[in-house]
Length: 240
Image 1 (tube, rainbow, N blue to C red):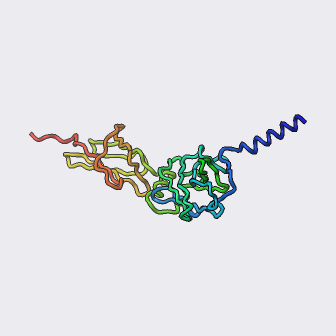
Image 2 (image 1 turned 60 degrees about the horizontal axis):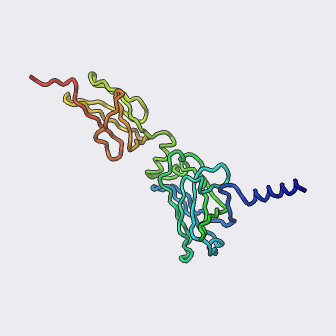
Image 3 (image 1 turned 180 degrees about the vertical axis):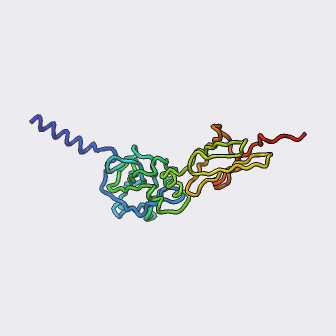
């Protein structure tokens, strides 16, 4: 009898404690769209009629992140957005925009977990959730952010430009992929022009290293496709 009591106690504790991120309600929402726009990841939810009937609802939200099981909690999320629940206006769609997602999450499966915030600020996770991979979404779009996501995952984003230059013989050599450089001189100044290849992107903060020395690049084009570096020609001699 004692063993049976202990077993019943353990079962009861398991049922009522739950796992972190386990949905607490059978209510569901419809995922109208999950897409990558130029500003970030956009998720559109449409609450069903059962949710709209609830008087205790205060807000509706989404948590996104990596989950080892089929659900995700706010504590596990990498980003959370909550929107006031507008029952009186019969609002059908709720649009959530997740900006500045870290690059380490571009090519992993992200769980999208909707939840409700009650009037007493308690959280109820909805029964259904969705998943997405930003890299896969990016390949379906054509804008600046989608191009960036694809380039990061495919390792075509340049954060360092490294060159070897011979100022005596007027030659320059690129030491990595994704760019090419030419060296020109008018015998007063030497100009090195670096061009980023079409399939690559350059970070807004990058290092220019010539002959193992970190330098300050000049005349960067607005689209970050061309960089020039200029120095005095060491072979120039002042006339007598």
